[in-house]
Length: 353
Ligand SMILES: *Cc1c(COP(=O)(O)O)cnc(C)c1O
Image 1: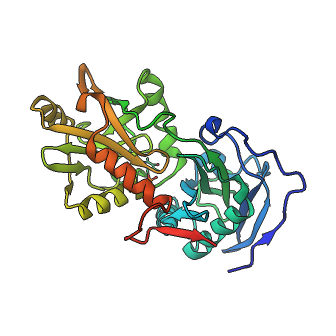
Image 2: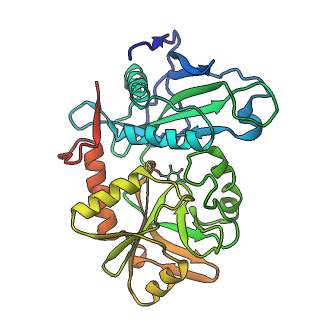
Image 3: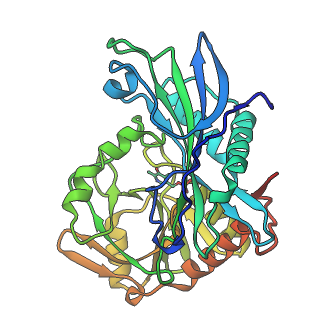
């Protein structure tokens, strides 16, 4: 597991001096990890200076979108160590995406090892102020130099790192969400459960038209009535004494923050239910005063409270546009575990050493 060749940069870049201006994914560290798939095996694992890669213009990824990715974070832990959050979940999911896109499987343990080695090489880039982290973006692209539609025989598995700022500049702020009535993101049997660029390409138009709203909430692709998920977040609703999240049925991305939130809330004794939930039920619950909270879950923001939903002509205000108690507690406890500030009864945190 140590056969990663390391070539260090001779021209390190200046590190960001103002962590409050990092934003998301705008700046990259000095190194990247690359491994090639060729002649039936992954080979030539290496950490090299960050920079452009050369691809044939006919490469599969450019024409038929054979691509998968992951998103995870490294944190500067409370004890000064470096922590990852459930990295094996990310690479297991990458393999599920690989399977759907006909991309060869990667070795989960080796991929975690590669992340750790890369993060160690660029550890001085991990920001430390409240809410910041080092975002990790593993991805795989098809690289065959020919135009026929077929699963490629050549791939690159690449990992890049980006120091990212606090998602919320001033504490947890509820966001406004636009419920998309016409466009759909994914259908069952399609690629909705895979983390692949095509799903995002399909979502841009709706997002562009939803001016004034921070994200789009997708409804199911058949009846356009059942709640699916938001741009890059899974969603939860507190209705009466139930915490409801749409069940995973093939068109929704199985979020790791979603899974962790369900496990945490169940450990508190909350009644968490995975089931179908229609937008009409949400409207009805809002009218009856039963809709108490709504929040999104995802690696980028961790927990994102929702203060307003717009569906056609109906504007639903949730919890007076304020963060609710369950959203706040989830955010506090999840980030405390991620940063190693509290006990980790689930064993989710992984130390980079
Ligand atoms: C990545 C992603 C999520 C969130 O998944 P996490 O593992 O919690 O970060 C949700 N929906 C979509 C479409 C995604 O791509």
